[in-house]
Image (tube, rainbow, N blue to C red; front, side):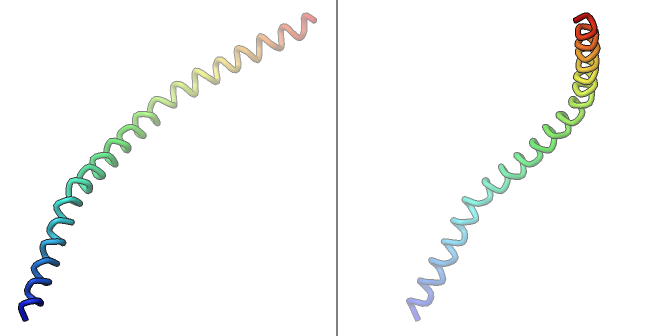
Length: 72
């Protein structure tokens, strides 16, 4: 009977130790997920003006190439 109590106590202590180690990891993971979501949102908002500027540059470069090819 004594061994049963010892093993139960060891099992409970092991679960407490696992919980104590896993809780900070869980919290850090949640914080990381929130930061990644904010970064993705910011990148999505910044990509719209960048895409427009790249389209304008591409159109200007295409017009320049068309004019230069006509001169040849």
